[in-house]
Length: 282
Image (tube, rainbow, N blue to C red; front, side, top):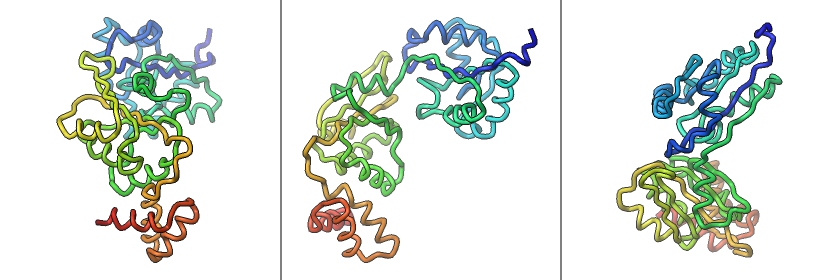
């Protein structure tokens, strides 16, 4: 058989998020048999392979956020040549807050086969353990680091009724929870899950104000934050739209006019919105 004419494929495979026992037999098989393995960190891949007693059979290449666009054409050429390309991230499912989406997008556009080996997911594990509604949810990934950009993003989510799942670095957890409390109210129920599936797994549940007090101490490990959605029938919160007012002001509009425009559009009290803007500037 001429392998150059055989249909190639891309396989996105989930790797353990902590406990090595969560590695699936299909992941192990593909690590041994794939022609090419694109890994977010090849050193981490080799560490995983050694821990599992597996020999990576194909050629390994790095595929991370800094080179994922530049590597797409090269990787797709291997698939067109009939090769099996295994894509793995450091933990969890590639393309979900990890490199992979752009490759999948390009492969779909090129009519190439893309499939997946499901497995561990920090998003779903944190959601399931949170104690918050799981019937409808949204994954928001990492919030912007800059305070203004973060406030704008949270303003967009102010009236979101689905449960929300975020990722955050441990050293930024306290300011992140403070921003959530400012945007959603300190009584909003939430959960912080850290070190999921690992020896020191911990899930803290409670209103944002309690979680914020806890996070003022040292928090370590991989972090996922789950936040309850806005209660049905809850009146729109003026403070959720401060960032929108500021954006108009930055664009040259007078503060009074910006407050009026946003209050009318979002159906919130002009007086409360103006007070919220002044409080945010204090």
